[in-house]
Amino acid sequence: KGEYYFGNLEDLYNKHYVGLEHTWKQPTFALTSKFKYFNAKDDGNTFDIDAQNIGLLETVKIKNHTFGLGYQQIIGESAYPLPDGFLPETYFINWNATGFFKEDEKSYH
Image (cartoon, rainbow, N blue to C red; front, side):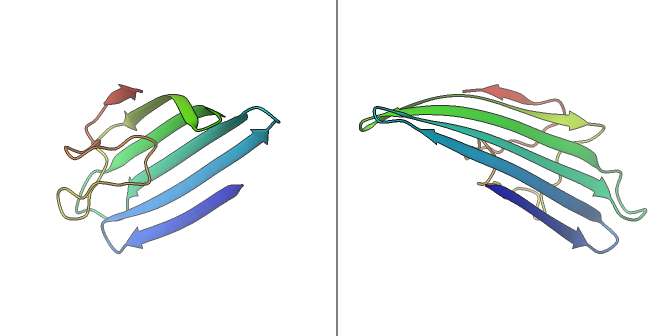
């Protein structure tokens, strides 16, 4: 499955998103791979925004149990922009109540 969207906050920033997901089903297990890429870039002179969020997640499901291993990182020259100062982006590979948006922030899970 593939996804793409583009969003623009006029004179603030543009956001691109690309997501890929594949599930390989076998009789005794299923392996799912997810890749998500978000790119935010300023669109005007109001802010200097240049941030990307890259996330990978591998999960294996055996009967009623799912085990996963993932990585996520914010890269670029700024923190990842959040429209109201703090609004968790629940579609990131990993998110929490305290947010995931600081420049060069990484998470392993």
